[in-house]
Structures are given as C-alpha cells and as structure tokens.
Image 1 (cartoon, rainbow, N blue to C red):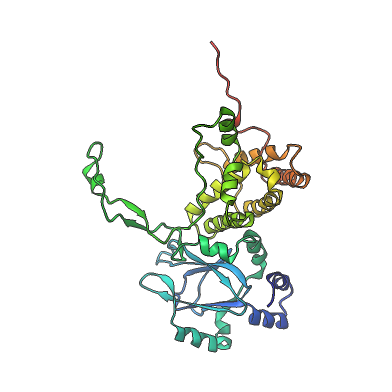
Image 2: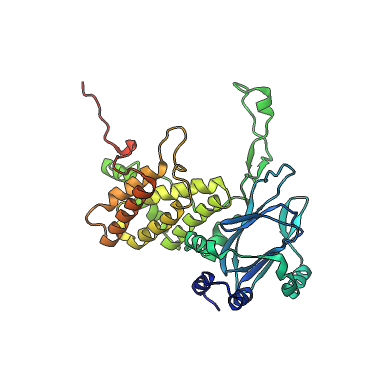
Length: 368
C-alpha cells in the first residue's frame, strides 16, 4: 500500500507521463453522473463550474477529502452548499448521480458502479485531474482527522448543508398570548432536522461549585484545565480532540456550516484559557499551535472581529494563551514555539497582544 506521505511527495513533482500513469492507478476517482452544466462542484479547497463534458475527478490522493456542490439557478446564483467527507482508498472509485428533484448527489446501484468501473479507461477524458498544488494545504488542515473521528462526528445523514435543515415540532407548544401577535402565535416551532447536525463532543458544563472554596471558584473560572481534563477522560486522546477542532474548522471554511464555526471558537477558547494543562500536555499544545497556524492563514485579517464591538475574538483569546506560556515552569520548547507564533501573528496581521482583555483586567471600585 502506498503511504499518503509518499503520494504527497509525488504530487509536487513535474507531471510527466509515467508519474501521471502511476497517480491514475493509485489515486482515487470520483464520478458524478448527470450533473447539470454550470453546477458548482468542488473538492477540499477547490471549486469549479461544470462544463458539458464533466464527469468527475481523477488521481485523488488516498485519505480524507471533502466533496461539495451547489445547484446554480438561471440568474447564476448558487444554492446553499451541500458537502460530505470521504476517506478514499487506493484506486477507489466513488460514484454519485444527480437527482434533479432534490438537487443532490445520491448513491447509485451496484450495476451502475460495476459499469463505471469496467469503463474507467474510456471515462478518463471526461475527468478533471485533482489539483495537487492545493493538497498540501488541505493535508495540513486535516492532519489529525482519522476515519474513526470522522465517523463519530459527521451527521448521521453523512451530509452537511450550509443552510440548516429545519422541521416543525410534532407537538406545537401553547403560546402565551401576552405580547405576541396572532401571526406569531400561528408560527410553528422549528428545530434542526434530526440526523443533519454535526455530532461534536459536548463541552463540559460548569462543575458543581456549591461547596467549593472561593479560591477554587476563582481558579476554575480563570483556568479551563479541569474542563479539558474532563473532555480527555475515558477513550478520547489529545489527538482526537485536535482532530475535532480541525473538523469544525474545515466544516465551516469549506462546508460553510456556521454551527461548526461556533464549536471551533468554543474549543479554541477552551484550549487557550488552560494554564495547568500546559505542563501536563505540552505535546498537545505544540500541535495546537501548528493547527492554528495553518487555520489562521485561511481567513481574512479582520474575520474574527465583531462587527458591533470591533473587538477581535482571537486576539483576546490568544493573549491569554501567550501570557500563560510565559510562565517559567512551562516546558521550554512549548514556550519558545508560542513566542514564535505570537511574533509571526504580530508581523503578518499587525495584531497587538500587549493589552490585557477588558474582562481580565482588574476592576477599580470606588471606596466611599
């Protein structure tokens, strides 16, 4: 079996005929049947409008990929994006067929699969070559995502949609007429359609602090290490939590799923507000810095800035992490990597980490 890393090295070689033939044999193929012309179709970080001869993509590196598509109307306006993850094996052929009623790609019969596989050579001229110049970037964004993580996190339906799929509650609640118009009272109560949501690990709620000392309450509110420990209890390893962070990011970046972005922000805040855990899991935090380095490269400078408060969520959150990393008992390698990351962000984005976030600054109270 050819390893993913060896294929990665091949990807950046000059595409001579022998190399192309090897990639054609080893790489995977995705076949999309009956896709209307001008439909938006993409894989990973790439997206195109289909032509009249488009049938799919070839020479796809084995491993995790994200396929996505959007129907396009007469005004050239694209519909909400639908996407799905897939772990491709060597030489695998994945076949999907366009359903004009639902405007989605659906699985085909075994007979259609066998027919496509037997005509792979003839189909070659209708297949676009996978764009290897972007694969290194995708691989960096998903380096911790295993097939086990993906099966656990992806929706039961295995499909993601950028527009939330809602359905009405079977039992309508009784609305209080006070303060509500008749139209509002007639509106059905909606919820996310079952099976379409990403199944991220729930972040721990606050532990019971009824009998805790004031010192413990203060430490718990400022240091998320206990919450992190709770998430790592049982079978979840640090790499799995980092994998979940990466799934959340690419689900938003590529799949346009906003709920995934919200989960990503919560995980980033959890990691960055840890103090004690920096000493216990230095390797995990080293890998976290690498993950965030590649993620931040993919978004505009002002992306994390709240349009109302004009405050940058990520600058404030990373400020806490960098401050904690400066403590002397933090492992040297982790502290140095953190300082290099901070310097890189300051130079590239002109972010200022010198000022303490308002919520962590001392409160001045007038004593009268």
